[in-house]
Length: 350
Image (cartoon, rainbow, N blue to C red):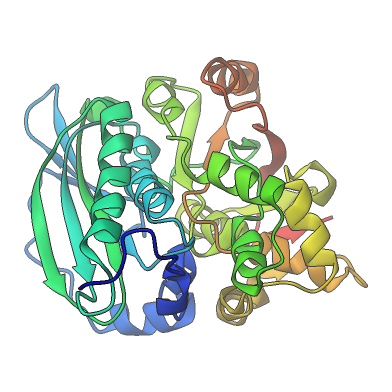
């Protein structure tokens, strides 16, 4: 293209749903996967599709297992460098959520070459590489295609000791629930698309979505951490429900304890929400109990799709202080206790 390099492009104009908000709705995904047979599973496949977990884990030896994941999406922000950073951070999160440490990535690139100038695409790739550099890993290859919407992400590969793997279906009754990042990224992205997000709100959004979930590696070594996942496209309620279903338990949340991005709460109260939060609620709302008369904005926040969201940890009460200390040590100041696992089913919010 002959477009000037300094032209302003709104990457989000190409997205029908940006970031993890473009994930297939949970109800539809369940229907699609129901017809997919699970067979020929090798004994060394420690984690597969059976638990709706964050990544696949394959045992290589008695002391080492491979963690493999892939994640990609359409733009959630207009700045190409920031888009690349967010997508890469989100993709590597699944490795940390399994208790692993990444060692290599492959790039997934789909771009409308007739609409985006080369320098914009280069900035996306540079943003992703910068995050991998911060994680101490190379982007060792990848695959690219010409498509209608910009798509970027990574195949992430990591390693973990088989005994340190943290699945999302091993929570125990009485476990404390700890969330590593504040909620509200999807709502901020909706405000950004409307052109109403403040500079401070954008800075909060970028800070949250580009913070690597590195505490997961250390948390994998704590026996008191029973289950772990990261909160992404299905929102807090959706990913917590995956822990509940897999563990055969229920969960109790205290809404007042949830860490929220300040500007996201203000926009939610004013009715700025994402279409994905409504699709999430349609898919699993029957399993979530809110207080009678709870305002709609509270429901919007617990179902808000989180792009590159925080780790959600179920740990023993005795391990709570150690888990929080690990988060604090690595700069996750918003990490806090948000609830607990209980006997029963579904998620109850008070």
